Image (cartoon, rainbow over all chains, first blue to last red; front, side, top):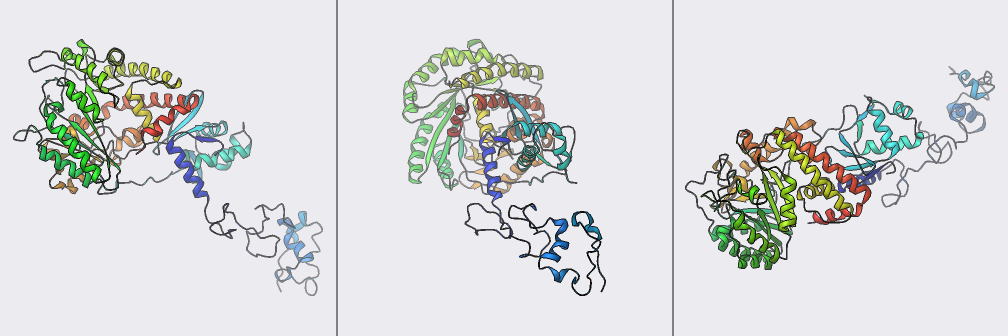
Length: 115
Length: 474
């Protein structure tokens, strides 16, 4: 602990307990039970896991992703392989993104389609 | 609600540091600046974590966030609604650690305040043996060894009456117990309390050779002691005990000898009593306790008297602190006892070990919760030949459990006090399960004083606290 200091024996025991409780099991834990520093394994890239909430980088944030979250539907649909989850840009909905010149500003214009 | 609020703690300072004494855990944490700012901010009311981070502006946000997390994990702050503290009962049957043998209920003194013979006695000794026969003492030793599974170290304490009036049995019991404990693979330790009137060179030599801890009951110098500690003809006892005490202190070299003083309404001059016993006579430690009595007795200390006692305790306790900062011994044992408990971070569900790991045995072999209840029919929990009546024991313990003492539930001093002495409660309120509300202010004042001293030692001479690490080692 950095901001409070255990002084008596009970406080030391509480501190040890908290430290050991911190060694909990994580989802997608790296290294198994015996790993000295347990932490989750964040998959690299955007396409390995399709659960919402896993769109994070290896540090647990969003800064290292290939697309900012505001742009991912739009940009992934153009440049990456996520077409199954967006309208068919090539044949049926070529104008789906025509109102979205700048994804960070106009992403609200990328709307649902009703085949 | 997702708001954070202050947890339960007592804040104190010492040696220029800020500390929290957490309740009920008994943990002591030193506050860093960011943590201190979080506590200060929450004093104006609960708020969400986000709001709290916004409101503590004097420190960088990451530091504040960490401090909040650390305070939260230690329960110094908690969610509104708080944590549920489960009622924890001691595992039963609880292994014995200490038996107090009242080897006799007879005494050659007639101290006017004595709880065993005085107006507030709880004992009903009529028709019972006055002296414990050796067979009963041996049966007690066997019972202690049998009922202390898992304990490597056990204690046998002799009490009375005046213990030395039954010295032959006391001595034979020590010899027997040492042999039996050795055979059982346990270490056994012996101690006793005496008024010192019957000490002889041979007895002193035996105590020294056998490593027997000795506590002497006396109340100060001649005038202070002889006001109430008198023989049955009214003659004071000081002149008889003084040379014997000097000889004891000179020739018992294997254990530190302590004095135990009973404070009464006309004898509350703690400092001068301490000076005499520690410096003039040379006791290693001196401990003080206000007399246990109904409030209407002439010698009872009223609340004004207790305030005066606390003032003098404060003066002596500060002397203790100054000695501790210089790594020197000071013999005010009330302070060292309290510091020892604070250092361990003890948090008691029961005020003491009576009826749990400690039992008293009367001359008849009857088992009582402690030595203060022996020979009292109303408090008998069993007999050394037949064992403890577990239902009676459970009833005694359940009534004395902190969870039953509603008045204590909002008191920050409850980890150490837990409602106070069962015997004191019985004498005052006729119920061992009642909290001793007549000395709450005293307990809080004393605990506050000792926390301040603990904090100062922790800040300025922390290595002194290692003494308490060893002291509690089992």
